[in-house]
Structures are given as structure tokens and as C-alpha cells.
Amino acid sequence: MTRVKWSAIAPNMNTHIKICGLSTEASVDAAAKAGASHIGLVHFEKSPRHVGLEHAAALRTRAPASLKVVLLLVNAEPGLTAKAIEVVKPDIVQFHGSETAQWLRVLKSAVDIEIWKAFGVRDAASLKHADEYVDAADLILFDAPAQVLPGGTGMRFDWSLLTEHKHKLPWGLAGGLTPDNVKEALRQTRAQLVDTSSGVESAPGIKDVDKIAAFCQAVRDYDNS
Image (cartoon, rainbow, N blue to C red):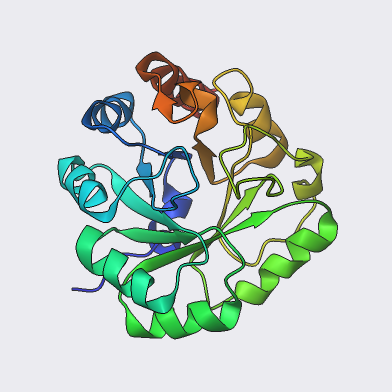
């Protein structure tokens, strides 16, 4: 059965909330209870949030139907990409490396799965680069520039760059979002989705259930304001 894509449902909903880098059943449960719409499972060995494919598959099974499961890959070879999709069976695959639009178009034609592409934003030119992914990705995720790791750094970028940008794809905001600043981020950018990872942790890779709840509540407060 064909999946319902982001663009078909997002305009009629409140702000989407993705809690990324989950690695335990307790954190999956906390995200669901708090009202998140998406959770992210990171399969990238250099990340403190890395989960193996079998573990990711177990967490994916744990997630209730209310949560869309996003599998995050970074410059994965085609063979690993295919295996990861087969084993985990995510709703969405998020590519967080230097994957080209051409490669994602090939993948998109071969699998019936939603594809997201993350970009580190340094300047307005970074935003224009995302336009190349029309027909290659279903959503663009604007994040802080990569450092030692491609994401989950706790750093933010200049949100004002998004204020007048004419987006050609559905998009989300990541990079340094916390329960304390997410409402201001939404006021400035009017993002369709907000994505947090380190902003709801007590230590790298360790999710804090109270921070997850506070983040989701802050987004809903914005939606209802």
C-alpha cells in the first residue's frame, strides 16, 4: 500500500515534533506520551546515539501508530541503505550526510518510503542548495552546520536566514532546539516541523523524559497561542 506522504497531510496539522536520537524503550514511550509526531533512530556508529539495526527494529516495533519512525543514515552505502530499510521498516529515512539529489532520486524510484534530507545552514547559499532536491526528497531539514558529527551538536544557526526564504519543499527546523527556545524559533521561522535531540538530554545520548515532555508542551503552547 502506498504511504501517505508528508506533503499530503502536513498543511492541515499543528506543528510536527520529532524527538531524535532515541535508544531506549522508555524514551520511545516518553515521546509518545508527550505527543510527539515523529521519533528518530540514528544508525551511525560515530554518534553517541547510535543504535544497531536489530535494536532499531525493536524500538520501531515499540512505537505506537501515533508515532512516525525516522531512520537516520549518514553517507550509507547503497547496500547498507537497503538492508537498513528492510530490517527496521521505518516510515521515513532521513539522510544527514553529503548524499546527492541524483542518488536520492534513484532511491525514491526504487522504494515506497518517505525521504528527508538534512542540510547544515551557514548562509543563504545553503538554503538555495536545498532547492536541488525537489523531486528527490519529501522534506528538507535545516540544521546547524556539521562539526565533528553531522547533527546532534546542540548548536543553532541564524534563524533569520529562513524568514524571507521561498521554500520549494516542505521543511523542518533542527539545531540547538530546547524547551526554552523552541517557541521563539517557531515565532521567527514558522517551521512546519521542529526536531530536537541534544536539547532533551541529560548527557550525550541519554534522553530526559521530563525535557521531552517540556519540549512537546512548549510547541503545543505555541500552536495554541
